[in-house]
Length: 117
Length: 113
Image (cartoon, rainbow over all chains, first blue to last red; front, side):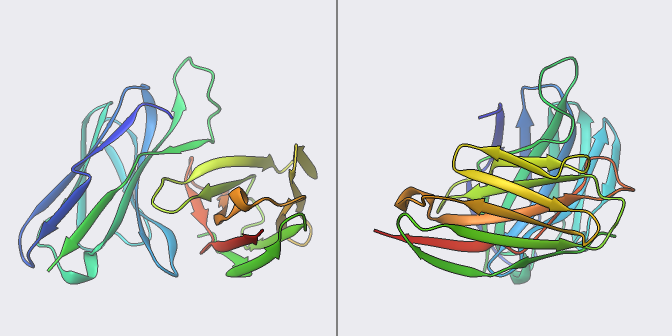
């Protein structure tokens, strides 16, 4: 597996509390993505980043914000968690600068299971 | 944006039989079509991909075909084995967004011994 870690791996929180999920990569990949996975919906893109401080919205971005202050870290924040944000969150990366991985392949992190009570 | 439809949502086959999963896409400019396999509790992993300038690609027991005119692509698994049981996702890279993939909703494949 590509060098991608996510933290925490599991989290239980209460409605209305802020939550930050972290994605860390050691591959120096330019692109990073946050997805959520829910039964019957597949993988839906929340936000993505195409460089440091460069981010854009995906198809389900409401209620989420992101930040990328350095190449290796991409943070996903739920400002005020709701029960509808209970999900499994996956980070993904693509493109290795100067490396052998093709531009289009996306490699996924291990996921974070978030439960909002 | 791109819209990817995947069928069927569930598929059961006997060990040794073939399995076919089909996807359609809407953006004629899409140029890259990967397939991911996700085992229970694990992360999705790329198993095969195809680019728009190729009609078919094969890797041992798995193959992918692409019909650009009809805007559909398919995953074929031959000689299925119980370890092929997983959820399979197709995806398409939209023509207007750098690197962004649009995923189908997934197919739960079960291979019975």
